[in-house]
Length: 332
Image (cartoon, rainbow, N blue to C red; front, side, top):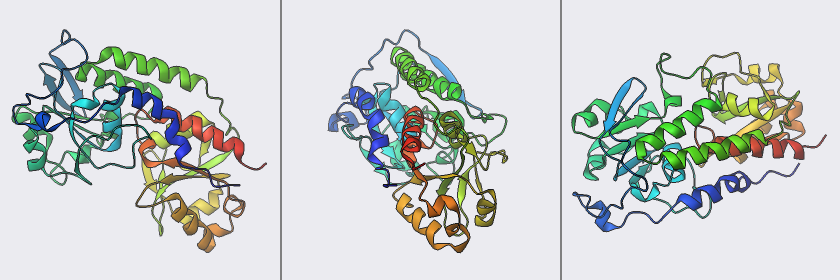
């Protein structure tokens, strides 16, 4: 089977993001007083807005004009909701934006320092992982809130079971879109995006019925795989695939190669990232004696998904559609 081109998955979302994307903020926008920031696209009539994520509450008195995003899922969410021109810095990109989408200013390759974030005078810091806003990341949320900087973390990434979706569903993803739309002052854009994504998801015909699958995220000696309650499980279920690690009540988990071989998945979903490419994962699978004998490896039954689509966000629906397309292309 020809190796599926990773660019195909990016295309489904590119038009939507391009339509909402605009040029990044210019030098005036980065002044400390924020005088060059463009006006929010929607009325501030709904403000102040108070939202809670991962147990932390924040209030915005007006739509944020200076936004810092950490992780691709957060960056792409803001762009898709028409507020990309208000992003003054991004960090921890998991991969390229879809072709045609204007990239916002890059603050750091991984977690930025607290000082570098504060230097941009943001009024909102939006993170895709709870750990992004910690002592080991860009600084604790409490510290930002004390300085009047609002923070928001994707609810799907909450680490406390009391705040973590179990399991994550597309309704949770759509709820985050709507909540971030309220936070940004773009509720109409959020409602439109949710309507479009619902329709796109309903149009997908699951093609993986009867097929078991391994979601191979990272790792060589011991694979880190999609477990039973997170985005990988949600995406595979929508595509009709049965996750061989669905019995693990976690978002991701470690699973020995021996356990993988014993469960003998019909197809292998390979997460493609710059630091651990799908091509590298194939080399690992084909060079490991334990997995090389698996029929899925011998017959090249590989599916691919880019890392930015593997966490809750605006790419999940297109990931389902692309996986079903790739399943159709598998040799019978």
